[in-house]
Image 1 (cartoon, rainbow, N blue to C red):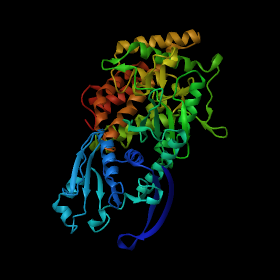
Image 2 (image 1 turned 180 degrees about the vertical axis):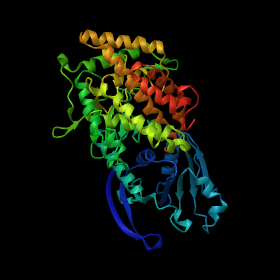
Image 3 (image 1 turned 30 degrees about the horizontal axis):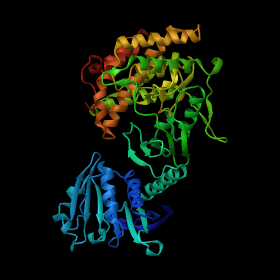
Image 4 (image 1 turned 30 degrees about the vertical axis):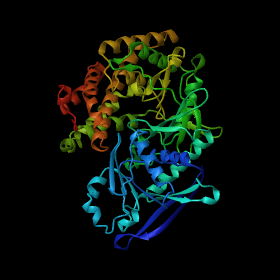
Length: 543
């Protein structure tokens, strides 16, 4: 396939005479044969989601049916799915693992009112809508849409055609991203690979697993789609939450940390291709074997993951402290920000902002919140005065892959470290041993803590385990407090209720940490203002 891309904007009149800037992106794709039509459908399917409208146009025999069938089969995950033309039924509905698909042919519609008789609105709600002869609806079905028109080009050959893709409204930017992905994969030799969407994490990033067939067997890679994070609304001192909490705003941080960790002898995905401006990476696929199974953590694998941390916390070769400035390219560096007081506090305050029931939040706006902040600020001082290292922040079960064919600490593959900061070494240890998604028993936690301590002492006889244990309890309580707020927010704001099932586990971790003598005053605050949590009763806003 060969392509051309054009983007334009125009001003139109919105309701009430107001001016509205309408974006439009056109992508012209030359298609040599049926296979390339199916590959185009696969590429587009990776960007589709519930609520999207995609219109199909073109003469008879131009490829609309081939494209629609390939698109639906790809989204359904079934290469043999029967996909008849909806010419006579007018509308076919398919259930897929992600969302329903409505495939409609409006050629026989004489009056747009007939759409209501068909039950159009009900069928289209929450579905991907794929429409042929959309102009019969009388007016555009949606301002934000993707139009795909196929044009026969017999001068170039009987199978040759041109697909003109036009993204309107918010689809303009999405189509531009699709083109950039296509160019990245083509330049890297992965444009003919099969693409399968992967289950994402709690972030806005998206991932695809690409499989390429070769003479030596199938190979795979991961496409990471992480465009620059837009600033949210200011929440404090004119800054958004992401800036205060030091969350990575671009993919540059991932590149810097991936290369930096690998230089120290750890396993991170090799970067095969990149478009830093677009936020795209094609990276090595480290597989899907984790450090846990259906019964929970696998002790030996968790032990190896702790040895990774012990070695990292000792520093680089000969114990040289790890740097806070890492190269991204030959001319561009990434500086790891400090895990400072403001970041710790705004994270902890999420428990008040989201975990506390809606009807009770106003009660925390005055003295209770002030006392909470004052106690945490004072308690965190010991951590802030302690040693500093790379704190990866998401060092837990979903982000640690097991690679038994490698040796030593390289058997643990590290991913999802772009939000790394310069912080206390205890943070990542507690992230692993008080895992938010799987149960780590108190007995296993203590055994693994002992293993980590012995490893640190072997590397540095002056290692202060008593100070580390105090920091471990403080940061365990801070992290559990933060995650209670994050998971409640994912439910309430983002419509992701699946995280609520983890709240009881995190509440248990928090109670365990608050039993430490160094947290006595904070334990009193939680007991006074979150008594259900401390009593082990259902205390969350979303449960």
